Amino acid sequence: MNLHMSDKYRLHMSDMQVWFGNRQVVGIDEFSLGAAEIVGLAGESGSGKSMTTLAVLGLAHTVGATVRGSIQLDGTELTRLSQRELLAVRGRRIAAIFQSPAMAFSPVFKVGSVVLRALRLHGMSRADAADAAARAMRQVLLAPDLLDRYPAQLSGGQLQRVAIALALALRAEVLLADEPTSALDVTVQAEVLDLLRGLRERDGMSVLLISHDLAVVAEVCDRVAIMQGGAIVEQGPAGQVLSAPQHEYTADLLAAVPRLGPEPAAPILPAPPPPAGAVPLASPSAPPPLPARPGSATSPAAPPPPTPADGEGDG
Image (cartoon, rainbow, N blue to C red; front, side, top):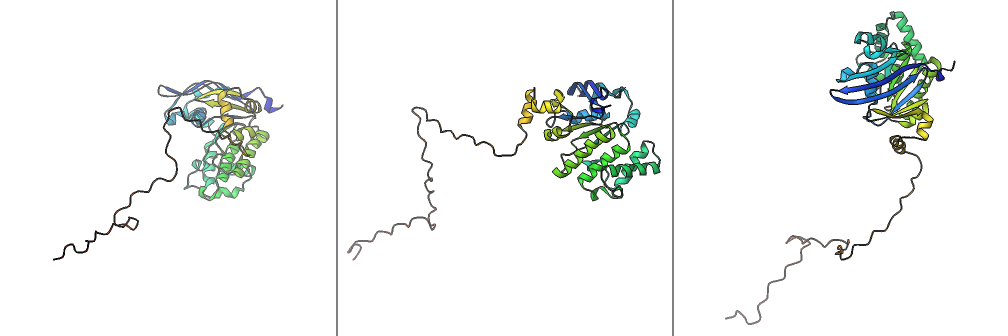
């Protein structure tokens, strides 16, 4: 079976809303993520992408928000689960990686201790957790002995790959990747995007890629949904949406993408003639010099005192 064409939704949202008190910040009428599919959720900063991620993870309450509506994972209604029940879902069935991978690791613990603790929290023995961690590290093209280092001893790209390795070790069904490449240089970005493709092709994992970078979305995503002001304004196949956008906001986002090559020079238009009766401005030549301070080197010499005429003032 071609997993890409499967009609089964791994993740499905319907009438999903996020509220801060009496203010609604996200309202998604319908959105789905299929099995072994990469779907992009794109939009400018503040459009509601990251709040959608927190809602799916059941963590919106940590920032003071409440969630209404439906969020289903393989038919299980996540919004009805208690926090204890969600602990079994997060990591094991839904994993997440974020923009700053260093935030996922404590600077005072070795990377491996964080990974092994997460695996053991989901029921693995110490030996099984060590084997799963080493195997996952090789899958993301890292040496397992890097687990014996502290976060400060790894690059940002290596830490991001360790976070992906943790999702692999737990065999998560869905990966939420929230701006996973925006803090990385271009070369490392390409490596992380290749890993995301491998998760889909090799492991059948579904990936929700949250990004403001339309170039990244176009490169790896099967479908894309465009968010504006907390709502999805357009969605469909990535090639179709990004090449022939139907919504004005999508077109504006595409127009804002920098492009290589010289920009056409703007025509230089002559200044309009002044209106009739206008007083002409002074010439823009150099302004007249300021008066010099008396006694300075640039001040004109004072005239000499008058000389009395011959014979005046005598006798």
